[in-house]
Image (cartoon, rainbow, N blue to C red; front, side, top):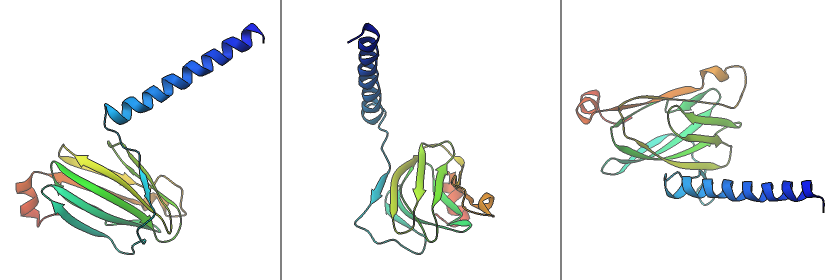
Length: 157
């Protein structure tokens, strides 16, 4: 084996170890979860928001040409949301601004991720897969407010 081949193989091995270490660090030290595809749940056709505990919610979100349902979700600061996303028609994307959330909405499948909103403000979400002529209208927002402001507005969702 040539010296340059040995160097390339050694460098490749070192990079594999570094990348694997980075993935382990992100998952353990930074508590970053990998999105999951749910296989034991039937796809749903309507959007729903359930309160599952104190500051804990479950949101079923449906992507349709050319909108997400619901388009606006209001939650209190500190909320943790179990987010389930599916599509009714074609493949859509789902990305939440300022959060590490990037899912695919696939017909007949459900994708899942857990998101915590620790800071108040608007978190915009949008479709990042080109899905047709009105793709630019596929957007919505999470409005995260103090609990007092949320009560004045009529509660979550």
